[in-house]
Amino acid sequence: TGVCLFGRPRWRGHWGARSRGSSMPSALKVSVITLGAIGGTLLGLSPSLSLHTFPPHVDGRTRTLVLFENGRLEDGTSVLVPSTACRDLSGWAAGQLGMSNCSQCTLYDQSAGRITQCDQLQPNQSVWVVPPERWFVFPTGELGRTVELRRMRSPRKEGHAITLETLSQSPRVFRLNNFLTDEESDELVANALADTDPVTSLQRSTTGAEHQVSFNKVRTSENAFDGSSRLARILKERAVDVLGMLPYDEEITDGLQVLRYNVSTAYISHHDYLDDNGGGHDYDSSKDGSNRFATVLFYLSDVEEGGETLFPQGQAVDEGEPNAFGSVTVRDVPPEDHIKAELIANGTMDLFEPGRWERRMLIQCKTRLAVKPKKATAVLFYSQHPDGTLDKASLHGACPVIRGTKWAANLWIWNKVRLGYQRAPRKKGAGRFDSSKGVGRDRLVKGKGGDEAPKEPPVGQPKASFFNKDVIGASLFYEDTFWDDFPPGKSIGVNTFKGHGWNVRVQEKNVLRWVITEELDQKYILSQANL
Image 1: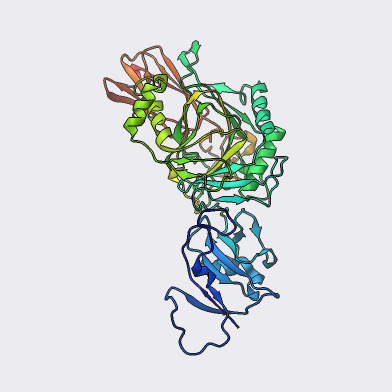
Image 2: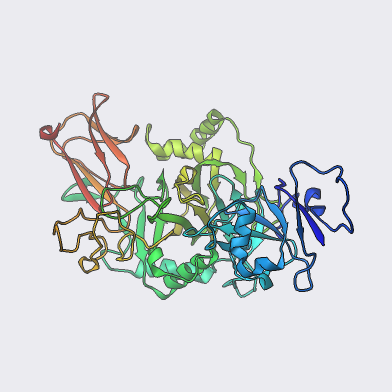
């Protein structure tokens, strides 16, 4: 009879992944031992270790696993698999972690591949136990930890594997290498430029009077949606495959949002996770609802300077070269006043008027996690924790482009069927979704009661237009940050997000506040009558 001693050893690093300090810890090297005869008291055992007896071999070989909870790379439990476990491998593994009622749990390897039977197991393999109704979440490990997704084929002709490289532990941010080709990047850009549809083609926010429109390059970004092209479908399927969310379901993805940023354009930091707007859709992904689970950001061009993806709550790092062992390191950050002085001295601050939010973002882009765009690479980050709750650290934005043009594309992936489809989760008593009204129309089907529920807005990026009819001395603020002067007769157009608050101030006092909904086109009027 074999004897397995196992506990919950802590270590940094990961078997099978390239990571500094990732050798097998000594605690685990001795966690499985065979004793010929046991008598009396075992001396020298740690009180944290438990004693279990199993047959030493299963089908002629020993299988030792390290089990982890979803998204974790610490507190691993080393176990020897008994032959009886193969009848219900996931239920048995969940029981080893103290997870009750988990016969429907799913097991994953480090590359998000599913494990369904004992024959798939390798010696000393790490396995993640994921509860029902949840998706696998990649653990981060140390900065620079790289995992090869060998179960997938890279689109690159060189045959390099797609790799997942840790850039941040909180928020969970990974660089995807060998995920995209230069040709695919160019094709996405060409598709966006060739699109003439007034709904899906590149759109710009504007400023100026209602009938005398002028474009403001300082805060104008352009975006188009590609939801139906051959390449968009390929890339969406590839991204979902990376996450292990198989089989592919079109109803859990949004269309690809293709973005162009010219010099001085940026985007305010925001969450991709959507707040509940009071309609019938159930947004609570921690329970039975659906929301944005993860985002894959494709970089379609290099940028001479600026244009990084900013995570204000992430730690600044030096990224190094993709797949270069040990290349991702924590960066020493100078004091903010030194950075501000440098930005003023080199003229970068002059791109923006005093008080504008971009000025603050320029400093954050030098002091917090800011991922540099590199053509044909991608970034993956999660909006949800493994339990489905919002990861507040996933706040992100786009740093101002200083030199050059930035092309990128966003893909939002939901944990369940997304808003706008008939199978999307509904709040209790909200009635079922009537797809005949079109995506974005959330109505109760006529029946008992017969009332209509509030409309759900289309999925996309809201744009808002603010017009000052007759209020003198007004200024527009995004929350508490100055945005623009707002004299009578002026119209200001912005790209924004649901939940953003826009305030009007007169003589340093807030006189009116607008909160953005999810409607794609919103108009707000300031007048003496509504003060």
